[in-house]
Image (tube, rainbow, N blue to C red; front, side, top):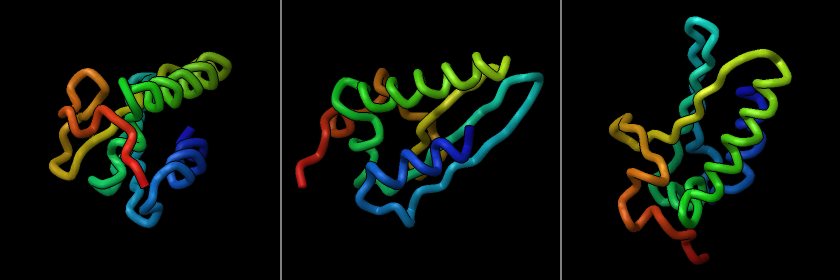
Amino acid sequence: MKQLLEYIIPNIVNHPEDVVITEESAAGVENLSIKVNPEDMGRVIGKAGKVIKAIRQIGRIIAIKRGLRVNIDVVDEKNRNVSAETAPPEFDSTPTE
């Protein structure tokens, strides 16, 4: 699962060298945390959370096929979880180039 995120995330951000993906497993649940450059947070979350929702859906499909449970979270530089529901307004839209 981590390999999938290591492929997808660097290809959608402007600073692929800042992407850090951590993986923890506990009680049959795989927790993946994505940390990106603050400028790329909007690209990973997407407008109205569509990008991160799509990434989570892909992860969910793979996890079901493997008989696992998976949680995928985006964390900011202070290691707080950020999602489409809790993201500040500046993260809620896709940045322009």
